[in-house]
Length: 126
Image 1 (cartoon, rainbow, N blue to C red):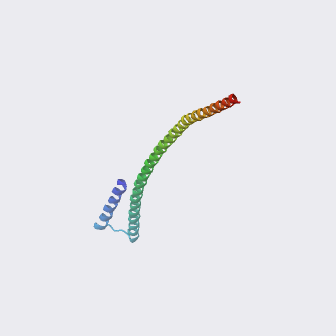
Image 2: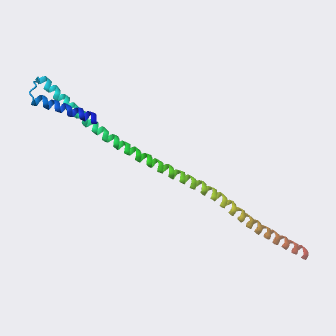
Image 3: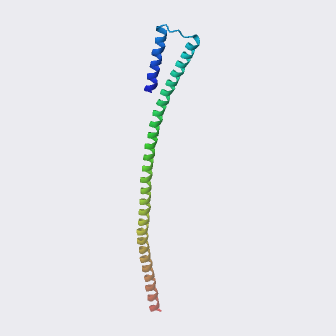
């Protein structure tokens, strides 16, 4: 950018020199010089605009990368929580099922024993 600006300044200086010190230029040379100056201004303007867009896109890219990292971190945390909950549920179901099963079996055994006692008492009276 500095190089272009410096050259542009030199061009303006030469143009001013040519006009102020009476160096004769043809009408065609003046038109070409004006056209060149206009194109150079447009090019510099375009360069500034592209540079501004580049900086803006760089910032957007950094923002998106940060957002992606946060989402990945959240995903890993949720996946870990899911695995932990899944394991805890498996363990709690196993403990609870065993306890319930033992209680049911104990109740069934008592019922069978009471039935056997009743049958035994009935046979004695017959």
